[in-house]
Picture 1 (cartoon, rainbow, N blue to C red):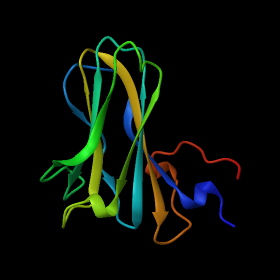
Picture 2: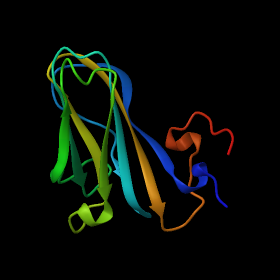
Picture 3: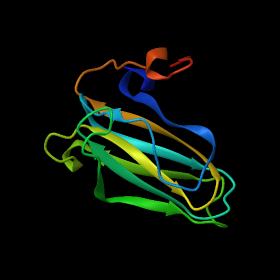
Picture 4: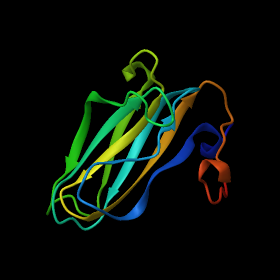
Length: 141
């Protein structure tokens, strides 16, 4: 039986901290070899709503970036502070020729947040969770 660390790949999308009040693309995540990607966004203390939307692209540089319809939501100021938001992408949600995804986050004010991606249902396991993937350590089963 494989461990969670061998069946799911974890990637940093946006670093924790305060981000200016404009749209930010996170790191582009390659879905090649995976059927699903779960974005896990964490909101800090908010001064305004914090909008999130999944974008797809044809390259790791974000070429041809476009929002994926139906994969967006927001953290509401005053209610969703210090909470987690989850947005799941399936490979079937992607347009032909697109395999890179990211979470675009748009804070209404300079607010704090962070986001990771969890890639699941790999075509082959075990998957990589190495320091080159942005993982600092990988301990236990």
